[in-house]
Image (cartoon, rainbow, N blue to C red; front, side):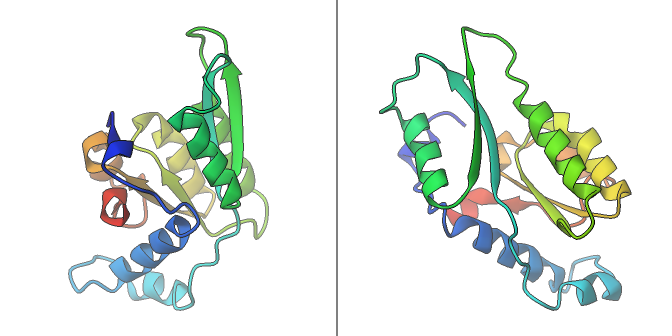
Length: 169
């Protein structure tokens, strides 16, 4: 939610590894519903192949703003940051860019095994479902206060328990 940056500090370089570890640990929770086949697929640690960020900000955004500095920190932590500059309140199409990229790589052999989406936006549900239909697994990382119920209540959207990011901030 608004103002989170006043309460949390993010180590962008460590976050992907921590999320992967949390996904793997959740599979071995005695109360989890994962099959033995699912658990067998993650015997080795997850290898992070790409960290991509899709965002936008207004062309007039102050280069010293928290938002701009945050994306600079992500780039320094080896994230691929894709920024759309906007004028006024026009549609940014950031969601579309991310969904297309996820689906594109889902069709590329050996590009990835698990797509991890950091969002709480239910607009991604169709892309997540299609990604799973392509044989890829899907994980979601979100803040509890900003996660749409469709992402954690729908059984066809994800393969793992949701990772609540505030546990790592």
